[in-house]
Length: 103
Image 1 (tube, helix red, strand yellow):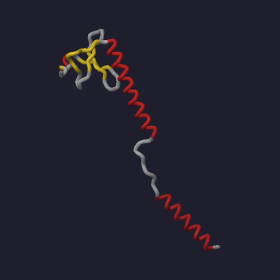
Image 2 (cartoon, rainbow, N blue to C red):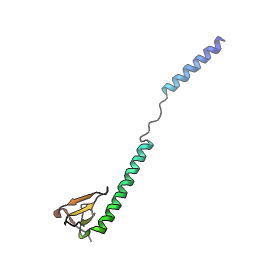
Image 3 (tube, rainbow, N blue to C red):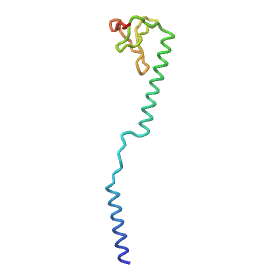
Image 4 (cartoon, rainbow, N blue to C red):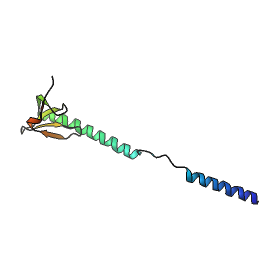
């Protein structure tokens, strides 16, 4: 009886020591973070598509010039020059900031 008790105590001790030493693997990102990141990307893409479509319908395109990274330039009803960035926002430019479009 005493031997069984000793073996049981040793087994419990070894088991608890092994559990305390085992460290779970660390994840870089959680599912919630991935969903949030993907939702933000989808939102930006949707906003960019909507803003580009609305600008193409309502405003005039400036054919001979482009934006800093080759973006399409639009002219609104107040003769302001702008382009649509990746987030779907209008970025207004001065006429001196426009670049010649490469043909």
